[in-house]
Image (cartoon, rainbow, N blue to C red; front, top):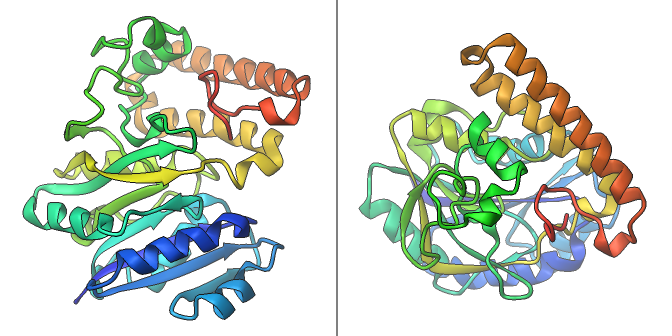
Length: 307
């Protein structure tokens, strides 16, 4: 069984992909790994670019953009998952990331040394050097999401109760168990995928990594944030090209996630209120984005969370 399958999903992200693949090439030295680049119905020439410049990668061309889960699942299926018979582990990696040369080796060592861990994610830094808060998250329960949307997580960033959404109460440079890492760069144990399956394709964009991490956690594995490995994340290179569609997908994912994981335990009247609030929030953000310059448009709920 080989060590690692790396899936890199692209949709018109060629401008960053070259730097990503050069970093991957250096990082897989000495590792029995294979790389799949999945082109999710883009039109920027990514498949030919990869075949010409990076012939050591396998290329999958999808004629249909079925979303983030759909595209990553194409790569995971090609690598033999969820059966986990060809590779011990799988990594999801965005094309706008850059790995340190020893990053993969160190993540693999950590995962192999901790058999109860199902997912491990590194510390992600944005282009300006700040932490990508999505790299360590709490499950968005109704209470956690409400505290976040009300701004209590910003007012009380060191509160384990109010700041659980992005877990800002945790030291940024300490390894910690979390509810979810981020699909931009996460290493997953193959046997965990064999137990829970792959990404839920009812999520078009956003929420699918939270859902998969939560399913792995509920299967008895730990999900770990491992800041000893630092990965650069330019973030939003695909989603910024269609902000309105991404805003709708972001809020649709909120409703899908709640319906799947919490609606059965929540009174019907509360569920209705949650869905109505999400719809109103989506409408407000669509209007706000329409009135803003392109460079200032956002998808997420936090100021400065660029798509």
